[in-house]
Length: 167
Image (cartoon, rainbow, N blue to C red; front, side, top):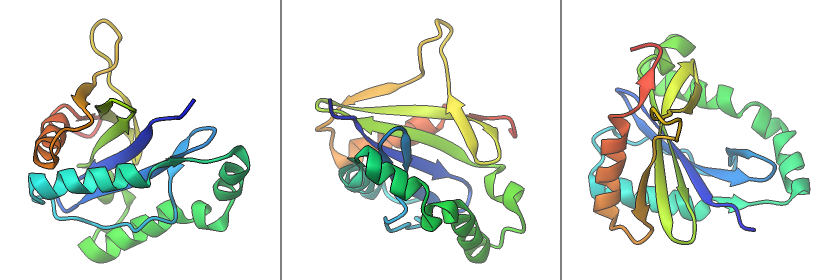
């Protein structure tokens, strides 16, 4: 059975970053993708296009590929390298200053739908799903053929549901 295509969206006051996720045993950031720090005010149309491009990059990999990537030096240093780039570009002094105002979203695309899940930031760089009162996950479901502009608007709307222990 094919796993859904997945991307992660992180946004703070300075940038918006969309990353494709590769899926093996679990999902992890694809270390070989281009990491592009977008302006927060990227247009809804361009944001929707970017999301769809990154969804297309997302893929399922074999157990062997997963193990090789997961244990690679590139993967081990990925988060630290991204944080160093954020510090260089935006003048952050430490990890807390990077993550304290950040919002996180997860998107999945299966054969029929794109599902957007706002997330709760429960630590610096750590996040988890948000549950509704009936313990079902907070998710927004759209036809996978949604227009780029409408997808961008849906992303922005979903971001308003993100929560954090820091705000």
